[in-house]
Image (cartoon, rainbow, N blue to C red; front, side):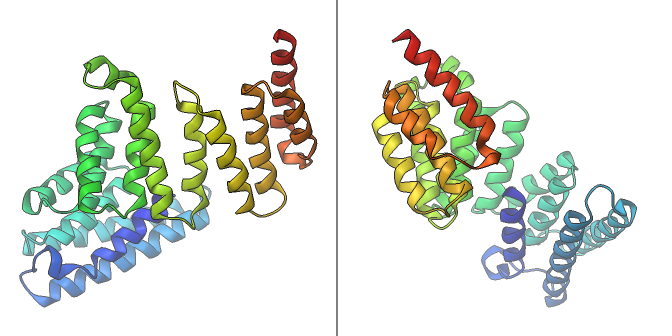
Length: 283
C-alpha cells in the first residue's frame, strides 16, 4: 500500500511545479517529468521480476536516474520538486540517510509540503523518535487533511510507540486510544473505497484499553456487507465471532463460526473455537 501510494504522490510532483517554486529554466521541469516517469517504470519492473530477476540491470537503471537527478540539482539548486522526487526515490531503494538529507533540504526551502513532512515522520519513527515523528505527521495532516495515508501513519505510530508516549506523561492512555482510533477512522473516511483502511480501523478496536465491543461488532457486520462473498465476508465473520467471545456470547459466536467454511480461514477458525471453548469453561 505504501509503495503504490508514494508512487502516485511522486508522479503528482511532475505536475505541481507552480505550487512549489520555479526551476531555473523550463528544460529542468521537462527533465524532472522524464525522470519521474523513468523511475516509475523501473520500480514497476522491479516489482514484476521480483528478487530472482535481473536485479543488476534494475540497479544500473536506477543509478543512472540518480546520476541524472544529481546533475539536475547541480544546475537548479533551489528546484524543490526535484529534491522531493529524488528524496522519495532514494527512500524506496534503501538509501535512507541520503533521502533524508534531500527531504530536509526541500523542507527548508518550502515548509508547506505534506509529503515531505510525512516522510520525515516515517524516518524519525524508524529511528526510534516517535514524539518528533508525531509532530511531522500532524503537520502533514494539517497541510493535506484529505490524504488517508497521513492519518494512517499517525494511527500506526501511536499503536507501535504507545509506551513511549505514555512515559512522557503528556498523554493518558485514553487520549492516545482516542487519537489512534480517530486517525484510522479518518483514513477510512478519506478513502471510502479502499477496504484496507477500513479493515485497519476495525482492528483498532482490539488496541483499545477499554473495550468497545458493541461498536466493534456493529462495524464488522456493516463492513461485511461491503465485501465480496467468500473469503472476504467470512473474514469479517471471524472478527464478529472474536468480539462475541469477548462479550461471552458463546452460543452466538458458535453459530457465526459455523458459517465460516473457506479452507484458507480454517486455522484462524480453529484458534477461535479453542478460545471460545476455554472462555466458556471459565464462565
